Amino acid sequence: MEHTATQPQRLARVLAIANQKGGVGKTTTAINLATALAAVGEKVLLIDSDPQGNATTGLGVAHEDRGQGTYELLIGEASFAETIHATQVPNLSIIPATMELSGAELELMDLDRRQHRLADALDAAGADLDYDHVLIDCPPSLTLLTVNAMAAADAVLVPLQCEFFALEGLSQLLRTVERVRSSLNPALEVQGVVLTMFDKRNNLSEQVAADVRGFLGDKVYDTVIPRNIRLSEAPSHGVPALIYDLRCPGSTAYLALAREVMRRERALRDAA
Image 1 (cartoon, rainbow, N blue to C red):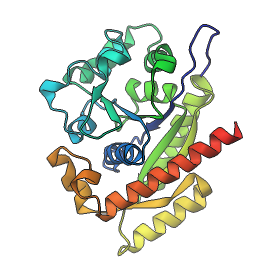
Image 2: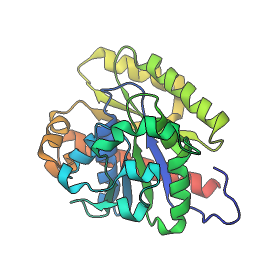
Image 3: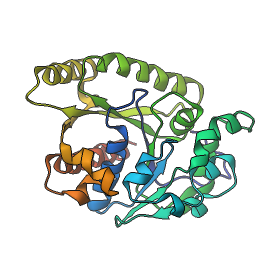
Image 4: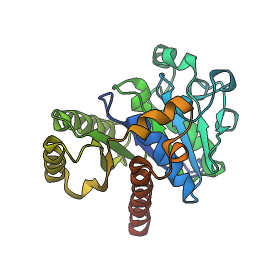
């Protein structure tokens, strides 16, 4: 992302959590990775850019309490400071998705710099955006909302379900990242791919994991997220799995993933 001399530099690293395929654990990863990072002392902002608003619901923010959110931020009606909401998780804030976000696609088409609205808002916040990590939960499709997230991000984190068509969907996403990098955000990279819904009793899960690691090598996180009923139950209670059941295998895995993400981020900073 290019900055002019008058633009304040961002301090937070921005990760877009994206997969064009639905049902891969994308929002589950957004909620629980954000919570796990916060649990180990990092200051985290989660931006819910999915019109379904599941990340907002999963963090217990009721519809009547959402006020201004991602929609108002993107169309320029509100600043970051006006859209950030505290959550029940210490160190974790959210910019919520509201009902209006479902219509943002059409409205963005008529605005200047429609692909850079989120990046411009982040840049305007600059050093005042006092977080260690900004995570963006993207829609499960390639829309202007997803493009805005990738244009604003330093890197993409890809949740990938251990199922038959996983590599096909991954190839499509990598092509999208490459298109965004070539036309909108030259600094964009894939920070990592996290294997989700892994069932060790299923030979297919083992085969998919081996295939993905063979294809992407060390871009694939060592941490694997298991198929775990507690991860599925937690959103209906309006809490992350780490609060619902800290000791379940899913929570343990997301804590391990948070540590791995932090190690990769430190390595990137040290190399810069």
